[in-house]
Image (cartoon, rainbow, N blue to C red; front, side, top):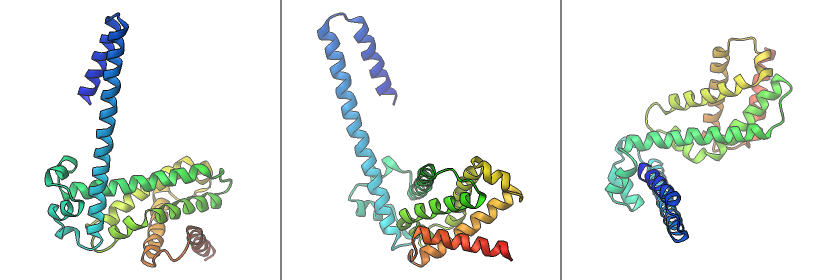
Length: 231
């Protein structure tokens, strides 16, 4: 922030101008301690924000979003209303940021898994690797996703999830030269089909209580695609 930047610039200037070792040591000591306390403050803020979001999700699992109040959240988190409003504007802002965090976490996990795979040398292998990364990521975040997909979530989550999911798949497909070279259908139609197929399987998988492993779900997806291709 500005105060932190100004303080650092002032101490750096003081360090250069004053010649005595004592003055230099004092300037460095003040700067180090300021950074130390600011890091503690930042970590406390992060934990408080996480506490609010966790409490919110716990309530949302048992109560519709429309009926949840700020009082419900602060009571569960054992904080006052002022602390809540330091982090979020209202419950809609809280929901938006929690959804965005979910989408970001899903995307990051997919990227991490994709980077660990060897380069796909066929179109089919590329699809298999993408499917396995997607299903593995969904399993990791299934508790939160299950709540948002339930009747307790805010209307429109399916659309927001689809849009975020579609963008992640599009970025992956555009970076894959083999898929781009092999794909004959227009990208927007292919993307719409592949996204709808994945989301349908994901929703059914979550409703079934994750009765299959990500590897088994990948096999199910590949079997369905192969069946369609043979028809």
